[in-house]
Each structure stands twice: as structure tokens, then as C-alpha cells.
Amino acid sequence: MIIFNHGLTGAVIALKVRNPFLALPLSFVSHFAQDLLPHTDYFAGKNDEHLFSRKFFVLLVFDCLLSLSLLIALVILFPTHRWLIWACMVAATCPDAAQGYYHLYLGRIKKKKIKFDPLSKFHYSLQWAESGWGGLVEIAWAIAGIFIILSLR
Ligand SMILES: [Zn+2]
Image 1 (cartoon, helix red, strand yellow):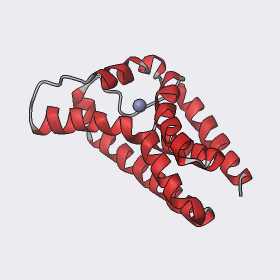
Image 2 (image 1 turned 180 degrees about the vertical axis):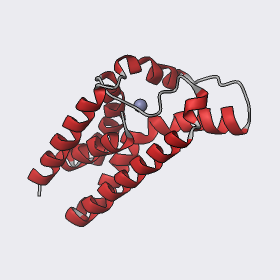
Image 3 (image 1 turned 135 degrees about the vertical axis):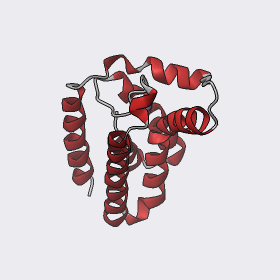
Image 4 (image 1 turned 60 degrees about the vertical axis):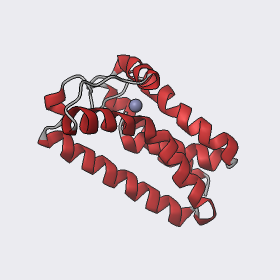
């Protein structure tokens, strides 16, 4: 699933739960639950040439800018919960950062054979429903998540 939707889920959890001791672990677990759903992803993790293509970096930068825009909007809308929103958005997206560590740092920069840790292996095993039409699920969740957040104002 794209970074924006993982972050959006973290923000929804932060604003619904509001208890950091519950919201942070729930946000982290939400990443794996969302990757179980049909979704699309420009970071397919199957072809290293694709991972370092210009298209990949353009999509990654666009996704990160969209996610940052969401964070800024939420900090303005919910200033008293800004740190919890930020922390939950990070917790909900961080498993994908591990992919960057493995593929970019170890694989590309260090030129090492990638050996994934057990959590990352588990993370990859959840990507069974990654497809082009999964983009519809991503769009549906983006709309639903934004409506949920706006209803909490
Ligand atoms: Zn993931």
C-alpha cells in the first residue's frame, strides 16, 4: 500500500484512540493488516531494476510529498494531538522504510546480498494481493479515511 494511505491510517488511529500506549502499537500493526488487503504499490520489491527507475523515484517523492501535506494539514486541524498524529503516522509507515534500508542501502549502495530479518520476511509474505486494480482499494480508503478525519473535527 502507498505511504499516504498507511500514514492516513495512523492518523485515523491517533485521532480515534488518543491513548499513545494503544495508538502507537495499533498504528504499527495496521501496516501489516493493510498490506493484507488488495492494494497497489509502486515499490513492488520483485525487480531491483524497477526499484531504482526514474518512475519509482518520481512516485516515491510524490507519495512522500502527499503524506507530508497530510501531516501538515492534520497538525493545523488538530494542534493538540500533533505529536501523537505524527508518531502514529510514522509507526504506520515504518515497515516500508525497512524495505528502503534493505534494497537501497544494503543492495544498491553496499552491494550486499540482501538477507531479510524475520519481520521483513513476514511483511513481504503479506503482499499476496498487490495488483493494478488494488488501486481502487487505495482510492476508496483515501476518501474514507479523509472523511473519518473530517468527521472528528
Ligand atoms: Zn508494507
